[in-house]
Image (cartoon, rainbow, N blue to C red; front, side):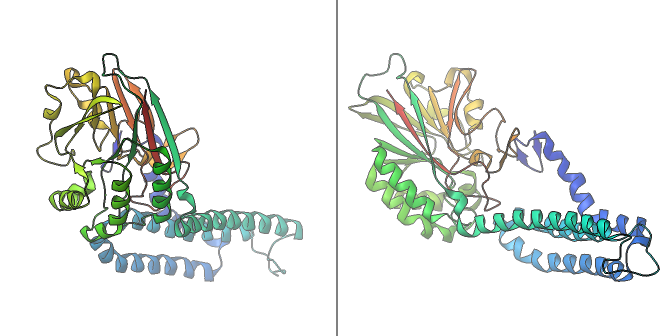
Length: 386
């Protein structure tokens, strides 16, 4: 399902629209419907708060247009602001009496018992909301949610492939430099890759978010990868949004073999495989031409978007496709999985078998849209072909 330009959206995300409508306009209906239960002060403060929030949002919007990587965060912040104002209004209604008494007591309610219950309920709502907001803020500020997960995928050598010792590949992707780059996570990833001792390191694209200047932030990371093993990479959609040729030149400068519709032989004591790197779907000249004439039984396709693994013609389906792009959904809920995974919802982080297509996807190392991961940690995917 596609919604607002996002592919792979969970159907329950359609609830976003009525929730957004209620968050912005629902409070005014409450004020009108329960006017007699609200004090004159609340009836004045509520529209003033909404007006102040609207003016603040309008003042910040030009900044967001310049820094497009903050757009999703901005719109969710707008929704959260109006939701918080309406939550305060609901609490005011809970604390107000059904019929205002002539003489108000210490809490303005008919009985101390009712006062205690309503204060307890209101306090619980405030405490729960405050806890969730605080935890999300601390998580985003400290990067505590960026604890690295090392995913290992073991695969038998394809029939007919050149024999040899096990081939070891490390797949990393989606740094999105320039948008809350988790440097501690990158340092941990380097240590885990070094311990794995790969024969080659594959980079799945999206080196930057939307600023070319952010390339300086990942120079050290690429240099360190190159010292561990040969590095092969492809461009991602964010790289192509900005300047694909400039990002490609940066990769070459750092010693990364960037594949843009090209193939490279991986040969050694582990046997012989062919690595084919796809151009990203955002590039105008993307095609499956790099797969033509290759032995599909020993071909590994590196493509930023795993959707390309599903789009490959039947006669050009490689033995294995390696991708990033989806971030594993970045935000996953129990029983629902990722809210948005930017690909066919059958494709999850890890190894996927869809018909005759074997597609392995890494959840990436960085963030995009929101500096938050929930039940979806960043990962390094290590693959062993024995």
